[in-house]
Image 1 (cartoon, rainbow, N blue to C red):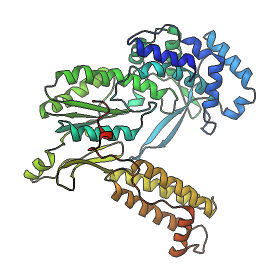
Image 2: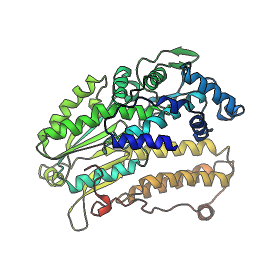
Image 3: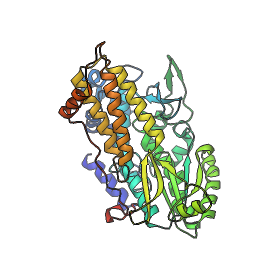
Image 4: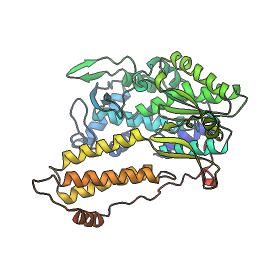
Length: 444
C-alpha cells in the first residue's frame, strides 16, 4: 500500500466520522493502477471479453494510460460481468459467480485500496470476514472463548437468504455516502453495480446484488452489513439488554450470544424485521435460538434430552467437559462439511488419475490434505481430522490403483510412497484452549 493510501487510514482513525471528499485522484493514479495490475492473479478466469493478464500486459503502459484517461474524464464504463456457476456446498444448487473483465478488475482493486483503509477504522471488532489480518479461525477462537468465559446461556444462529444477490443498490449508496463525499467515487461504484450480467451471450441489467467473484464485492458487502447488523447490534441490541450479549459475523454468516432467553428470543423475532427493512430475507429454516453454555448440558439431560449444538464456519460447537468434569466449549468438523470435502476429494482423484503422473498425483493429494488439516486441526478436533485423513488415504489408494488395468500398489508399497512424499499425520495446528490468556475474546 502506498504512503498516501496509508495516510488516508491514519486520517480516518484520527477523525472518526469524517467524510472524505477528495479520493478519486488516487483511483486514476498511474502508479496505483500499475500496482493493482501487478497484484492481480493472472491464473484467474478472464471475463466476458476473454482478455487475460498476459494479453493486457503486452502493451501495459499504453493500456494503463488510456484507462487512467477514461477514469479522469469519467468516460470509463465497466463491462458486463460474465456469469458462471460453481457447486454450492451442501446443496444440489449452483452458486452464481460474476467474473469481471481484466481491466475492470484493475479498477475494482484500485477502488478497494482507497476505501479499505477508511472502513477498517469504521468496522466493528465483531466483523471478521474479508478483512486484512483476520481469518475464520480468529472468529472461531473468539466465539468459543466468549461462550467459555462470559455469561452466555443462549445462542441465536442465523442465515440470510441469498445475501449477495439481494444487496439493495440504493441503500448501499446511502451507506457509502456517510463516509465517502467524493461523488466521483460513488458514481464509479454505482456504475460497477449496474454494469449488468452476461449469460449465454445475453446481457441483462443488474438491479440488485453485488456479484460474488468481484474483487470489490466483499468490501461492499461488509459495508452493507456493518450498518444493517453490526452497528445495530452494538448500539441498539446490546444497550437494550439487561444481561450480557455478544455477536460474531463472518461475511453473511453470524451468531449472537445472550445471557437471558427472553432477550435471545426478542433478538430472533426482531431480526427478520430488521433485515426486511433493508431488502434482505432471513432464512427461517436455518435460524434457531438454542440453549448453549455452562448449564445447557445439565439442563438438557434433566429433561431427558441431548444438549443442543450449532454449526458455524464449518465447525460444530458443542458443550463438552474438561478432564476434571468442568464445562468446556468444544468444536469438531461438522459432518456436513466433512462429507462435502470427501466428495470433492473423490471427484478430484477420479478425474485426475488419468491426467497426472503418479508422483504428481501423490504430491497434489498431499497439498489438499494439508490444506484441510491446516484449518480443521484445532484443539478437541483430532478425532474428526483422523477420520478425514483415513478416508482421504483410502480414496487415494483406490483411484491411483485405477490409473491402468493392472493394480499399481499393494498397501505395503503404497505406504512406502506415502512416507516418501511426506504424507501428513494429525497434529493440532491451532490451540483453541479457552483457558489460556491467548484465547481471550477479541471483541469484548
